Length: 203
Image 1: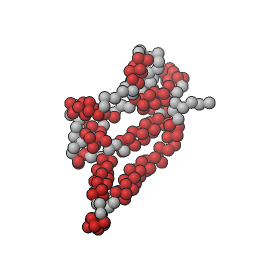
Image 2: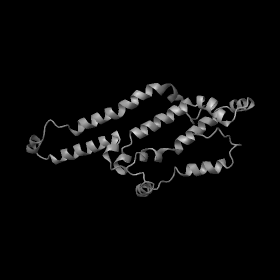
Image 3: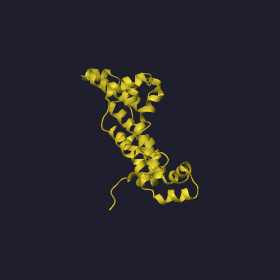
C-alpha cells in the first residue's frame, strides 16, 4: 500500500514520483481508448475487467501515504534499534496501526465495486458475468421502455396489469443496493470516523 514505510530520506526521487502519480488524476483517455486498451489486454468478457483496472487508486494511495506520514518516526526508530527490518516494521507496527485507513479504503472500494454497473454494461457481453447493478439497470431500462409503449387506456388494460412497474423496480433496486453495505458498515464503524478524517485540517 505504501511500500515498506519508506521515509522521505529513504526514497530517492520521491517528489517526481509523487508528481507523476498525481498527474494521472488530471487526465483520462476517454471511453473509446479505454475500450480499445481493454480489448488489446484481452479483458473484455473476462472477470478480470472488474479487478485489474481498479487495482490501484491514486486517491487511496495518497490517503494511505498521508496516514503513514502521521505515524510518529519514533516507533520506526525504536523498532530499528531492536533489529527489525522494513518488513517487520511494516507487518508488526504499521499494519496494526493502520486499521482505520484500511477500513475506510476497504469500504470505499467495496461500495465502488458494488455500485458499478458501467463495466458490466459496456465491457461484458456475457450476461452470466454481469454484476447485480448491471442486471438491475437492464431491468429498469426494459421496464421504463415498456411503460412508454403503453400510450392509451385500452393498451393499458390490455397490458398485463399484474406486471411490475418501473417505480416498484426502482424501490427494489434501492433496497438491494443498500442493504449489503448497511450490513458491513457496523463492523467497521469504530475505525471509519477516524480514517475518514485523514488529511483534515486540525486546529
